[in-house]
Every structure is written in structure tokens, then in C-alpha cells.
Image 1 (cartoon, rainbow, N blue to C red):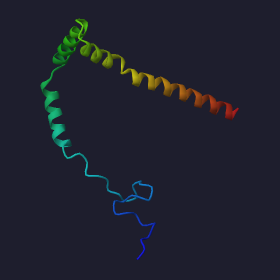
Image 2 (image 1 turned 180 degrees about the vertical axis):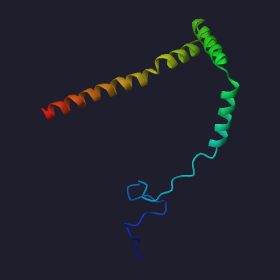
Image 3 (image 1 turned 30 degrees about the vertical axis):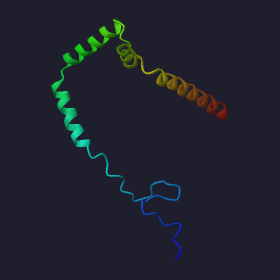
Image 4 (image 1 turned 90 degrees about the vertical axis):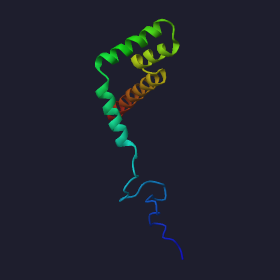
Length: 106
């Protein structure tokens, strides 16, 4: 007995591993509801003033020489160096694509 090579496998993926039509998807995150409830409780308990005080203390620690605090403040304000570099490279690629398309149309 030969298997039909065009029939989707039991896991609803095609021969290339892509999901096929009718795939219901995975079960999702079983803890999502609990995380949502905990996040809502945290947002209810923490005030704007609490966040401002935490940030102020973090900045104080950074100014006192705490390298981890300084890194956190700078990462939050400026973004991580890798992310900033990636954005610059993506913008350069987009500009090159626009220029290429403009030359192609002209």
C-alpha cells in the first residue's frame, strides 16, 4: 500500500512543512488567562507615582555608578545598540530599494 504524496500529513502540514488549509492551529498558551489577570492586578496596584519613583531611583543608581542601572536607563531611553543599528541598516536598504525602483521606472 503506497501513501498518497499529495495528501496532507497527520499534523496538517504539506511536504515543505507549511500549515495546510483547514489547520486549526495550536492550543495556544495555557497560562495566558492567568498572566492576563496578574498583569491587570499589577496595573491596578502600581500608580503613575510609583513608576515615577522607581524610574527616579533607577536614574539615581545609574548616576552613582551602578552599571546595571545605567545600562537599563540607556537601553530604555535610547534602545539597545543592536536594535538601533538594525533600524539604520533597514532604512538604508529601503532607500536603496526606492532608488532602484525609481531608476527602473525612469
